[in-house]
Length: 490
Image 1 (tube, rainbow, N blue to C red):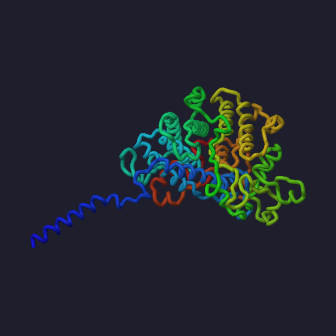
Image 2 (image 1 turned 90 degrees about the vertical axis):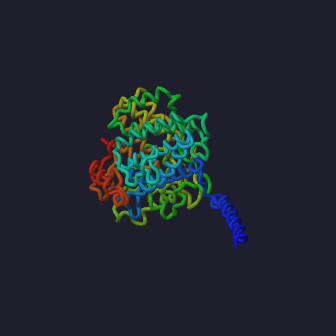
Image 3 (image 1 turned 45 degrees about the vertical axis):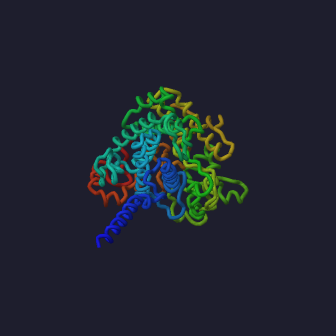
């Protein structure tokens, strides 16, 4: 028995040894690698973020800022606002950003680390500007704590002043980390790996945040330091530097092309926007919108809008032929490619930031020049991407309502910034909240006591899963309703 048993023991041992030797290789999924390269995250981070900006811009940003209006089952127009998907989508995108940041930290990849910080600042800034106080310092730690610290399942809500200070700090760090001599930034569908353009974006976004909190924190020192050192702090300066996502052919199409044409036609040009652009004979209007079907049939194309919050009785079926639909630059038909791009930040916005900052004494310079450069940059951008030959002529710049003068400079800047920010996320909404320009009249029929909302509600998930911290946030900030002001507002 012993002579028979021993060989069996040896045989089993050899088999087990062999199995152990190959076990890891056999049970490793080649399609789900344990080591993730940072470039694998880049496309989803950029495209996911910008697609949300485009979707939110059309569904609510354009309506709240009276670029467009709902003519069928109006809700945003009548200020029936909930939490929107920005909270969930924002933190979902931020989880990918956090993974990129963790990988970059572990491997000493400074350029990817900088990209992650910039995208964090973009995402957190748009979220805090929509909700106010929210989880920031303890966010994204549900699986892994910071620097080996404990996991945080119920993150505290941080004040907006703390969030803004943190985001500005992250952007400054990102600018200094970025170096063309370091690792290549691969799978970069935003800037094709250009370190310089990432630096421009970081610094220009920083200027946006500095001005946005300027009612609470004077931005002079930071702004002047950046403008005095363009080699260290390059800014977007030309149309070619615009921070935009260029969409191509299917499946990477402009997100609006996934919308049914029936849904497109029930969001029309707002009378507020139509009246202003018609008054100024603004050459961007034919790019933004189509003439009304009724006027085309009559052989006299015109652009007309519908009053935001129009009464139900006036929103009959005949409203569509009498009003303008968004133009073919943005939508031709479902799944048909268009020239529109996903706007993150344009050089026109930066010029208006500089113009306002001069007027308020934060920086020195020629406010009139910055202002006119902003108008020119906006028109030059739409000329370059639409193929329509438009420009900011002297006739346009010198007409009443556009011609620069010191007396009402802030209103002029605010109005032209509003026009230039068409279909750019909620950025025009945030600027209106901060400045009060352009002067807007609340929707005719609304359910908010004739007040234009200034924030979204926290999602119910924040209350259900993190009630104590939610309660503290509401106590510190004010009621969880659409009229509670941002910290940085007047």
